[in-house]
Amino acid sequence: MSSFSSLCSTALLILALVSSVGISFAGNFNQDFYITWGDGRAKILNSGDLLTLSLDEASGSGFNSQNEYLFGKIDMQIKLVPGNSAGTVTAYYLRSEGSLWDEIDYEFLGNVSGEPYIVHTNVFGQGKGNREQQFYLWFDPTADFHTYSILWNPQRIIFSVDGTPIREFKNHESIGVPFPKNQPMRIHSSLWNADDWATRGGLVKTDWTQAPFTASYRNFNADACVWSSGASSCGSSSPSTSAANAWLSEELDSASQERLKWVQKNYMIYNYCTDAKRFPQGLPPECTATSES
Image (tube, rainbow, N blue to C red; front, side):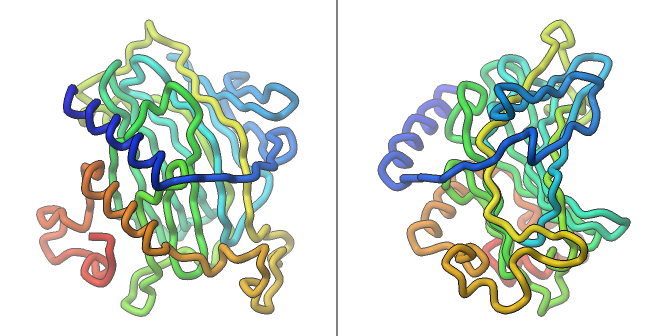
């Protein structure tokens, strides 16, 4: 772990120099979300400024957004389960309804004390996923809140952490790759027990003597097109021409592309686009057409 800690320290210095992130947060959990399950284990606190999910041996908990979105730039600050979080998964994602659903995933896989969390990402189009990329982080995500963002527009999906991009999934419908663009999605989050697979492939089980496990959320913000009654709040006539909706055509500039390469070089631990054994008939087409690989 000494080399990992050294890498984290170096990362913090680099990010302090290259990344200055200022985001105006406007969300309120009482207004924007509702608790979906957990029998009291999910709580909205501080007049709607804070939401906590907890997990014990009997149950986890979860919440959904009131709104559905069809494209957006969505931020959430999360402080993950501290200490021995092995076996737990904190999931934060966008998902549509139905059997051919679209989905944009963050899953935070817990670990024993002192070992790094794994950030698991995935993109589903029309019910098909299998596009996993996994990363370590360059900081302790349990010590404080950090901002986890999804930029979703018709051209691309960008996953970012504290303003630093970690993954870009581009629209490659032209070569037959489904891309989420027609189905509105809600924000979902949950904390649950997955000790059959989450930590070292299920070798490390949840230590229930450490329960309850708690993850905390604050400062939700969505610059997004809200979908309601079959229509988008952005309208249908070139919404991206508005300065307020600039994210609808946003892409990574050269500095952000360099930061993405830096993260993927130093912190990516799994990439489906390099897993030839998993795809004996050939890698998915987007892997050779994009920077996914």
